[in-house]
Image (cartoon, rainbow, N blue to C red):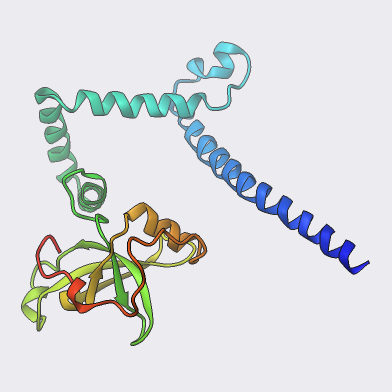
Length: 222
């Protein structure tokens, strides 16, 4: 009887392991597509798909949104498109309330999404939140403004995400000598964090105990 119960439990857990990731993936995709479909509400009522086709087409808004993003990116890669974007930016920056908000959001998006930016380009091992406890963070740059003038040594800016939701976390400025650059891609580090350490990346070399100080980065881009 005990063996039979154990077998049933094992079969049930196996089914969960197969279906839960699939269900969550489908739920997230449905949420994203449903949100993007809301962009159809921006069209005139006479252009709504329900009016044109007589029925609702799930995913049509998502396809049109992706196509629009692609077209905008294509048009703004040439000289005229870049000048139009600069002109549009200049107008928005001079609008009260809207200007500061737009500028802040644009700075963050340029830092995170630009191919020439350094944000989230490196995964770091840091000692946090206490001595003897380690976690993974991401390099976001170096302290700016008047901050470096009040620091005792060269520091780097680090974003430490929370688990399992990496969209929230902590911004730290840590001495460059106290962070270790990991031989790990950002994607692998994110998977490691989101899975709460369950999905561990393959080791690049045999573990030989504590991290060697020799691996601590001393050169910029940090």
